[in-house]
Length: 272
Image (cartoon, rainbow, N blue to C red; front, side, top):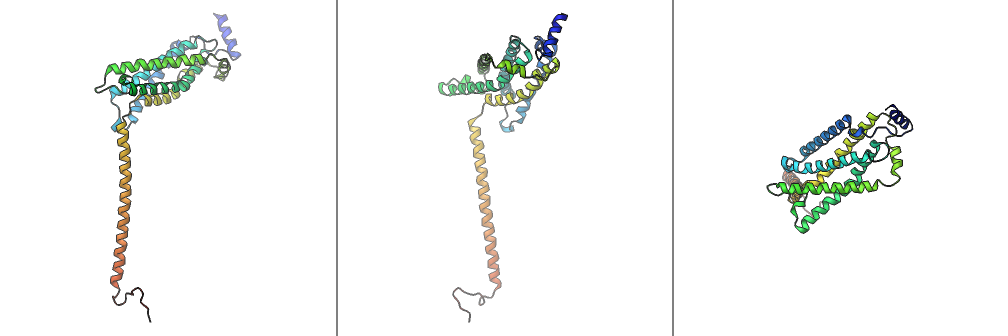
């Protein structure tokens, strides 16, 4: 036991391992993961209250939308935790590299997948795969079909990222990333909580906009309301201009009345 600890200490001194292979799945690691999930869930609740009151989703529709993202995020997270222990070297850095790729390249794959499903839903009439649309009243079968489809998208993302990770240059990235951190607990907190919190907050917010249903009639109504408001402003300006013109005419006519009719010069008259 002492010899293995000495090996780890030597590896740390040479910029090698910072956290052992069980760091992501020990008690402290699971605590950070549960805390991160709670914060991400709170972020999605806050997003619902930021929606316009007239267009705010019901709690049931909100749950249908966010639960898909929750299942997909859990699938990706568990896959990253398992894959981090399969690489040679520090599992914390491998987990962070996978997470950053999932949040960038993976988000692009998710966007393309969701838009493809929505396109097929319109062209083929497959209403169940139209993300964010569950029927009236909301049908649990449509939600279940979209959950399975979204998890399949996450599997495609993870397979694509794993294949991308086979390139040789990631070894140099692994040696560079998190190199200033020497404390395993601090490194684990950065990898499992601090960095993922800010990135997940942005990613969950953007992905929720992809998944939620946007009624085209509401967008048309909003645009018509804006155009009516602009028309009202233009009409108000024209009425105000007419009012100012009429007031100036009244003032001029009043000045003319003050003058004696015989003293009012006529056009073309010559004073001698």
